[in-house]
Length: 498
Figure (tube, rainbow, N blue to C red):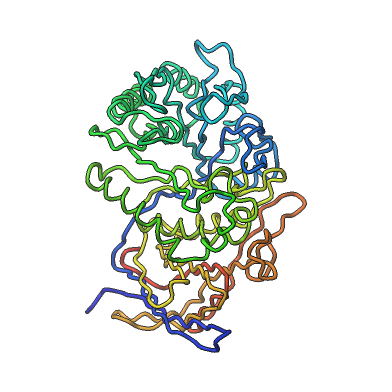
């Protein structure tokens, strides 16, 4: 008996303007997995940027930086809690200018505007009182913490090559910081060494050989302070050094380009444009497979649009076409974690910077976290590049979860499940469906509908419950124009999901 267990949906794409339909076969291969993601694949960042950080004649950070964010905001607390747990990466461009106010560091200044300094700001400091406050909310909401360390401490700018930093990393301040963290019982899941200091860097770079040497120092420090391998934080970095030290290889994705690009709304709906970044994912995966297969790839920062995001696009429904497609694509290239820049702060935040009310991408991320399990399944579909489809084993067994992203202005209809191989699959249990659409079809609006109900916050900033609509397994799945749909099929027993 053929146990390939291929599950197929024949998709009818109705192009209403032309009164024509197009059949598209979507085949989900249930036999083997093509990737594994971390339990906490969906991740969001908290960044160091102060209020004075401005781009494109606007200053979208407000009081949402790590040093000035109001950590008592009900909306913020509820938004984090809903993930149960959420991975948060503490870091960003300024992380290599942060000293920790502990040990020998007695003077603990804030970041100040300074055009001669890296990224236009002076060195700043994290006081331990603030680290205590951050850990209070992390503990209260069950956060898994990834912390970005300063990897430029002790180095000097090269007199010969612009942007290059030379000399050994000075680890004492990080050691004191880690010891303080351990003494307080705070848990850090992983440490990232520096912010994009490899290659040309983002304003600063360290040569590969030097970086490799220093990351060994960090790994040894982590092992010394956390002798138990079970609770030892992972070490992440952008280099695959010859030593078995990096547990995760990090890179950043900003494939939508500058935040003031007037053509971004076109790019975000163009499947051929969205496909281009697959080369980056493939390249990272190939490097890892060649040099260090036991470490996983991480997107440790991705906001889509650079320099704070795109004011009229990043916080809108349309951004989900880019963001959820990235989650799907990164998974298929066996990436373990995808950190969205940011949880709060800038235009690209999952939460509104001033009110902490969720933007549409927040709900898309939350459903991904709840529905899409670790095991990634292969999906093939032909004829309609505007329909993006990704499938995983369901997070709560049994079954599979699928996300459909319809970039097109035309609606799609999936005909009922068809039998492609034995054992025959005939759905008998109701399908669970979650249909996201923009209010009044305005994809550049900030109000999203879930199964026709507007996702607007309550007065007490509670995160709305997201219940599926149940559909008879024998009826077609309909994907409306410009919509995003999650579907869970409980009685499809894929061998890869056993």
